[in-house]
Image (cartoon, rainbow, N blue to C red; front, side, top):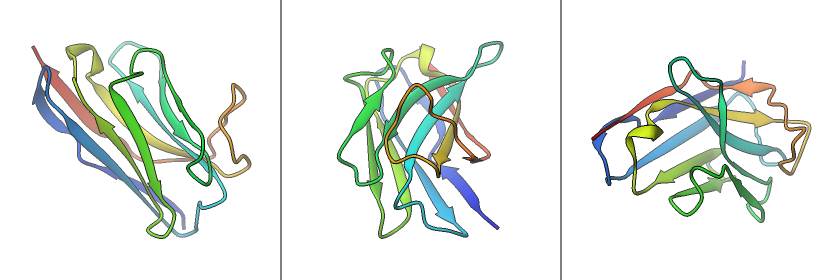
Length: 124
């Protein structure tokens, strides 16, 4: 059975940093684009970041560009999200996702695997 498990969420003050981690088990995603999404209460799910199968291409949502960085380690089957200069507007549940049918992110990104999410709360 395939699982994506996120960790690293928590409560942080505005301006602070957090690093989220996602570990995959049950199969390798070394040939798949991996991404992070988030959803705040009452809002639609929002794209945060994606990284291509070999780490050579990275995409970011406009609201996080310059503040967040996505990494992956295919040997460990992990994808991390380093979040700096956090703002209260970043408060959300963050989800790790994998699109096993694609190697690169596109507007047609459709994840077929999702994690359970990790809560990030940024206080002002």
